Length: 218
Image (cartoon, rainbow, N blue to C red; front, side, top):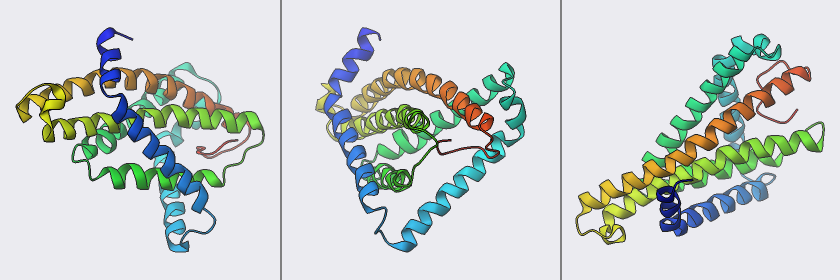
């Protein structure tokens, strides 16, 4: 990690910590309310997860057999697709939507609450399968938290330019985007690792005899 990136993390540590705590609390709330939440809303969460699975199936469904066979080209293509989808999600839903600060309540809090509801019913064939699934999910989620913090920092720098040691909101805006660029160096590295990890995990699930593109432990 370069000195500039490390300094950016130190500068934004409280924003990162605050967003991280908010994320964890929202997931915990989802876990806690999963069994007695409003049935209509829980049904909506289930439909959302089903729709997401269908979208994933459309993207990589045709690559299932080559992936099961372990073809390196297919692994690379799938990893690239997963990386691109996650990076776009971080940028649009994490950074851009968080610049206005208020949408964090819908993008981060509601999204992570729904994630907690989904995790409440998690089960797998072994402790290892669940652990690997949660590790894969953790790598993806930590980048979302960083991306959200990058967006929140941009919004705060527009409102309070002095936090960037400047008097102009435009200068604060530009400096905050520089911070975001350095944070995205870390996001890209983590997502590159996560994408390969996820594709190899999917291949493992396919080898276990599951025919659908998996979003849960084998």
